[in-house]
Image (tube, rainbow over all chains, first blue to last red; front, side):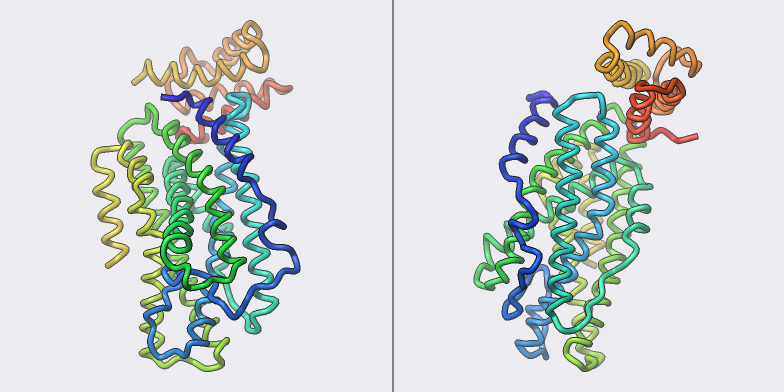
Length: 308
Length: 81
């Protein structure tokens, strides 16, 4: 088995090879193509919705694209703090680990800048105001108050989910949706760097779990579940805001039945694309399985609860 | 658990101090900080936190090592006093 030093060194080397600049993905003055959808239908959750015109369906997809970048910029807030905290802990220790963790923090901050650039381009050209959930600091404070092992589990989960968003939705199945090329590029380049971050998360999880008593591991799983439930609340708020943004954009209120049906579809798509795919991810399950024999059952229960 | 934990937490502190101050001075600082913190061993994350505080109180560059250990202790579950 390679040493931790070797593992971190490999991550840094690969990270240097695949690194990109924000301007390479989207220039400050570049414009999104509003003739095309922004996110795959699995994330948008609008494909099966009835009673909307093709143009309205497209607008709703684009609003979901706006909330996608907003939500990732939102969660990056706590992930940046986590990466810096782990880098601080490693200071004066293994140089490759410090470099990997510092790059991790730097890259997450860069991702946040990229997401903000997309948000700004959207706000500039969409033609109707859209809202994103607020209080990233409050959510970050809640998450960072949980066990560090749980925080790293949640981070690994989210990072693997971004891989799934690219690999499952863009590369493997729905290229025929012809997404806006800037959005497709965002999904790809986000994933490319998150793939390295997920490896760091796994190493940090193993370090934190090493020698930890069983009750600490149980608490970490409890805390991880609490973090996911908190994030589920954030997604619920965002879905409600998306519907409000959509009604403003189409210039009419939705009737009660359509609104309720859309709300259900958007929430189901959010839970599936942000949570269920992470919970089902093999790499994630392998890490969780190392913690305790019963941990996978808890993941399955959580998946069932979220799909109920 | 005590032996494993002691060697793990102590080894984290020792390796940082040795890397920064050299083996001799690092070991001396470790002994002094353990005495200041009233510890005969570093069994828990809370012990590591107390050791970190003792290093922070010394000031200078050792203070920075103390802060790094404090972060390490927090990640490992230390309850800040």
